[in-house]
Image (cartoon, rainbow, N blue to C red; front, side, top):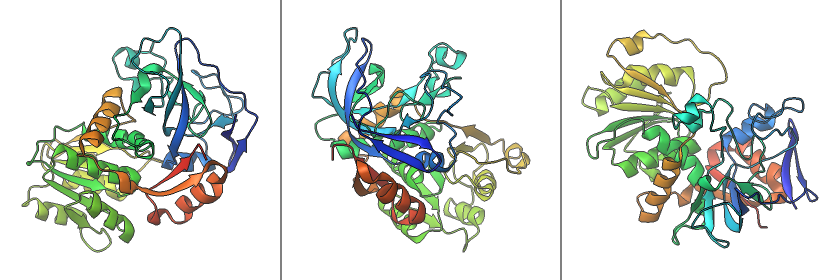
Length: 357
């Protein structure tokens, strides 16, 4: 079968002779349809973090590079394992949660599989990937799609689930909650949509790139702050009648956003960190102490987040179609996918790989 595999830094190869995986008794076999290119994919392209090295097998998959890539994917069920008790059947259209977990560590026992001590992701840590002809996955992470969700939109469920999980860290009260979002890249835009779907009253977005600003307004931002032209903290407080937002969600991950988020939220407010940081940054904890503010880190998602996103796309409170800014063939991923996302990132939100083309 075909599989796009990562062999090393800036070395992606579409191979045509990769053995087709056999569906295990406790697995579901899926034929991927569309797979999104994620910021994590771009990071791994230059500096592998989640992808296991040639001498360091992943603790769950036991695989080393070359690794099949792609973790934001939709597809069609082609086979059900003999021991799988599920309502799924061949031909069902699905979205796949790419979680890998050991189910035996303390976080897993507590239901926090996204914090598994050995965890990883299908399409980054082994176990196949979305940019292949077939992949076998754990049935608990396969979500049947309602008829009104197309397979291309279904490939957006994964990044939207990241945002849904982040927004879920604060009790959004419909018509009352004021939120501040840092960064209007793909995850920031997903956060905006999830806040809108949950009924946030005010959605203030901090972003300096013009095209991303336009995307932010389209997806539900009520106010925009360009940090190069305005004082973010001062303006956020003005918008919220001098009090400050109830919650700030940081998808930018730069020192300025961390400081501004902590300074801007109201007393007893919450700061949710979504970003993955490249290095340590200076931070004064007094920004949290004075006002008894809460700082929360989030990682990935749980099954309920995938289910929540699918429900809200189906009922129309999430309308992410315009996040798709390009579709490419699987044999052109480095040239038509990675290159524009790196060199023209402000022009794109999500480029999808058509895995059937």
